[in-house]
Length: 333
Image 1 (tube, rainbow, N blue to C red):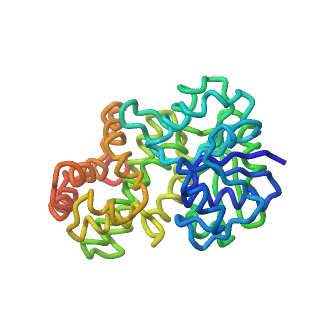
Image 2 (image 1 turned 30 degrees about the vertical axis):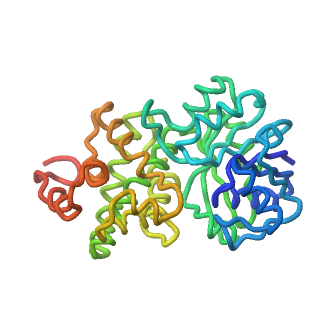
């Protein structure tokens, strides 16, 4: 049995806390807002995941020290833009033998670091750490609908610890040693999902969506491989699996934001209407910068950046993508 501190009480953190609780672990869930903590204690509900009932044995707190101290595993479930600041607050309470399982998805814009790199930067290279990723919307996990994900860590022991903590009859967990590929797949799929949403908002059809997913995974894979990731990872749950669900699901906040933009809304207004953090907006610039750094062409991600930050008309972006230079799909004649 693990003693787990879930850091972050959004929909994903809450769903994972309930999954861990059902596996018999002791779970404490932290929110940075004392008012939210008290509301959840009083109502047994979380407004970020209203369909879930929070049982009495789920400890809820706004005290970070309480959530971290004495735990064997910390599940880091804050928005990726808050990962570094949250780790800095946690640092005084964390020990190297605690497993940090990061379920946030994103690249830090200023440093181009993935989530595990940020953990190592703040807590030290000797910190036990790994990531959990894959096609897994909180709204379905909390309903105990069958879900399959991957736990990635540089050590088999670390990946297995995460696997053992989360896995049950409705939540299957595979292990992987490819942290880079898993994190790049998790981060860039949000950017491609914004593009997929824009396509939906413009009224385009299944042909367009299939093209975006297919060419999107090519961009993600080429960058991940250039950075040291494995092609098998991008062909699996953390790559094409997560991309399909994020580009297609009604639960996807990135797709929803993109759809609103495709319908004519500004990026800021779209994010406000979604009412949750749209990770792809924060990862878009970093993804494009990584492409430049590693010499990888990312045409879809480039156009998403131009739409989000330079005011490019989405229909013009589509035309420009369609009229790129002629080339073979794979290999050459």
